[in-house]
Every structure is written in structure tokens, then in C-alpha cells.
Length: 439
Image (cartoon, rainbow, N blue to C red):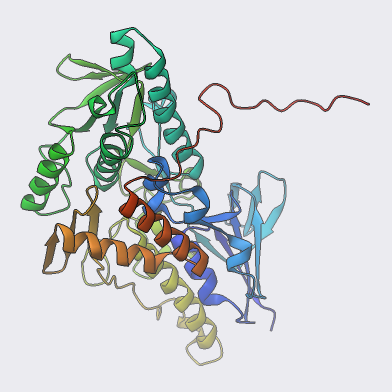
């Protein structure tokens, strides 16, 4: 029997997990497509943005990960058209990919709630490139503040506004506070880095809404002790060049505006005749994670908004994505088994439903402090911080990445000085590619 062609779009947690579960199973020919050549450990992306880690510490080549998976082929391409009737997908490269099963795992992107023009005046945090841009902008602003003699310009350059009080915003705020208020406090001569304003802005009444109220309050108090201004109940209604406008008419000038306030599904979800489950464009699959009306198309990871077969809401976190990728692989293997039995005609009906195993929520708040919510377990402070370190080390793919991150953290902890603070290309000075000079 010819191997079933499985096309996986996206090399994140869900897509990669599915590919690895199908690896070396000769019943399947797997093609994995991602617009980059690497798998990114997104939970630590903020540490690249805040100069705690270098980019290679949290990324690894997809080809390297799948080197021993003889039935898996990886391509660096970006799909922009899907034909469910012909069962083909077309990449920007012009190459066409055929499939028997399609796994949509392209992840989420930053949402500006319908105000897409805000993007050009903000910094997102979804890719390595965006993380490096944040780091480059903040460090370059400090260098410019050291140069200028204008107090108003210096104040603007030394203001970092972070919009969104979820885990990303909280972790960014704490890490930036540690970096400039502690690690860099004696490195400048004309400015006092302890006066850098880090402002965390949340539209609702409290930060970390998914956590218990006492954990949210603990995070707020901890951030305040680090020198972070936490503004709750402030809604942004406009983003201009280096300026935020709020619904109450007030404004904030900041040279670095980081947007961590929302996510939306990949545009590829719009190519299916399925109504989105929310304004972010996420889809609600059937219990087996297939799309309604498309039993051969599965949707996983951050593209999903659903409750599992026990009625438990599935959060947009890495453990949930891994479990969804594993589940799709399990469904495909079971379906091929049923094809050789008298239940072949009912193989779609007999698919198992997805059950989410809650691994809990974690958020770090600077050095030695974190909050953990897992089932009935609640931790905060140093114990939560240690748990956060352990879990993130274990989830990293590859021994080299684990070792590199562990050594970087140990050095930063003992010396109080993260090492990834080089500015390669300050904003506006990125190299332009030109034709070579003829001989």
C-alpha cells in the first residue's frame, strides 16, 4: 500500500510533535513546511528580547531535529493557497504539495483588534526577528539617551511601554527591570539606568487574569518593587509614532512600544468554509481535531478555540499544542489500522476525542520570583521560580540548547549580568543588499 501523504504546515510545538510521532512509520510519507528553517521555543522568546539569552539558545534547525526520521521531508516555504477539493497546497515558492491528510499548525500572530495600522509603530514578539528588534531598539535607545543633552528627548528614549498584562507582558516587564535597574546600573556615565520607565499597560482591572486574584496582586506588587509602573483599566485607542493614546484622552510618549495585548489566527484559516470561533479567527474543530466537513483536515495549536471531550477549555499554551499534535498522529495511526478491519467504513466515526491534560500555568516575575497555577497547586516566590526553571529546561529540544540555556542562566544569576547585549545593527541601519561590484 502506498504511504499516506501527511502535509503538516508549521514547525511549532503542535506540528513538530505530530511529525515526530509519525517519524519512521513507513505507512506515512510526511512533509513538514515552515516559513523558517527552525523550531522556536516561544516561551523563552522574551529572554532574547531582554538580552538574557542569544537567539540560537532557543531555536534549533528542523532538519537537525528530524534528521533520523527517514519518512519526513522538511521544506522552508510559506503556503498561501489551499485547495481542499484537489487536496493540494501551494507555496510562495510556486511548489505544489499534494496530501491525503492536512495538519494545519501555522500558529498565531499579533492582533491589533482591527487596527492594523498600529503595527508600524509597535514592536511585536512572535518571532526571533521581532525579539532581536526589541532588544536592538531598547539598547539603542539607551545609547542615544547617553548622547543627548535634551531632558525631554532623554525621558522619551528612556520609556518602554508594554501593552498587555498577560504572561508575556509581565515577564517582559520583570526581565527589562532586572536588566536596566540591576545589571546595567553602573555601565553608563551620563544617564542613570534606574530611572528608565517601564510601564505595563492592561485594559482590564488586573494583570494575569487567568491566574488567581492573589497571584495577580503578588505579581503587581513584585513588579512595583522592581520599578515597573503597572497601569490597569487603561485602554489604548490609538498608536502614533512613539506615542500611545488612551480612551480617557491621556497620552504617553515612549520610544519603545511593545505590543503583547492579543493574538489572532494565521490567515490560512480563512481558506476554509468554517465560521471562526472568535474575533481572532481561531477555529473550533470537532472533538477529534478535524474541521467540520473536512475529515482529512486537522487544526491544532494556537489556531484552535475549543473544549475537550470533558468540557475543559483548551488554553493556547505549549503543552496543549504538543498534546494536540500527538493526538492527530494517534488518530491517523488508528485510522490506518481500521482500514484493514470490518470497521473501515466507520473509521471517521470511531476517531477518539481529544482530552487535554492540564499542565498548569506559569509566569516569571524577575529574578527569584514567579507564580504557578496547576490544578489545586498554587505556588509563588522562589519555589515557583525554581519550578519555572525546571519545566522550561525540560521542554527545550536538544541537549545543546538545554546546556546553553542552563549555563547562561547560571552565569547571569551568579554575576547578575546577562551576556547577550550586543547591538549588531541599530534601528534604521540594517544593511542593504546591493549587487556586487564587477571586476
